[in-house]
Length: 69
Image 1 (spheres, rainbow, N blue to C red):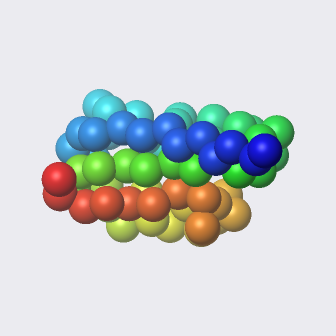
Image 2 (image 1 turned 60 degrees about the horizontal axis):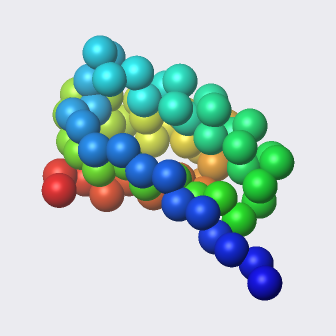
């Protein structure tokens, strides 16, 4: 049986929350566990930067930005 693991975080998309490190870790996790998925709930000044990083790291379809929750 295949399991899909989902890892998530909630928080304002701001520098202090360091979502960039989470995304870099997500790339490593997804390489090892292809069914892993990540969700990020929240909004803030770094939304566009985080969206761009998701694309640059090849994580589209693996990481979902939920927006304000």
